[in-house]
Length: 124
Image 1: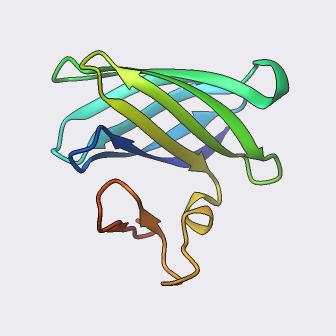
Image 2 (image 1 turned 60 degrees about the vertical axis):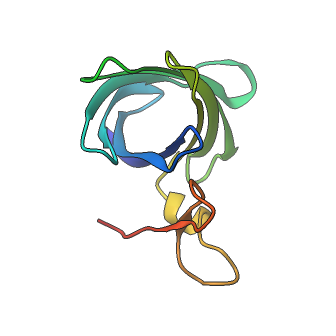
Image 3 (image 1 turned 90 degrees about the vertical axis):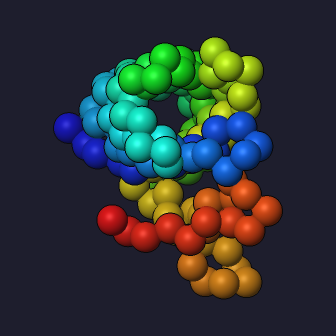
């Protein structure tokens, strides 16, 4: 079983998700929104051409549906887009090297672009 960090922007108001995906080709996702609401779900990467989907439910009633595609097979890095049941857009990044993928050339540090001033990420 593998584990990869999952990061996402939820809507346009600075809400974000930080969690982890477990499994190989399919598995479970666990994490929380930046407001502390826990979320759980599942993912499956057995779609054509490196595509997959994920569904998550949060304890506040939020339900998320994400379609994603692989951008780097060697590291398993994927990008996803979706909507939640509140009409908010979702932008998702995951993979064993996701922090390297989100590292900007200007700062040399991983940043999550959920707000006009991107959020600094840590390896925690």
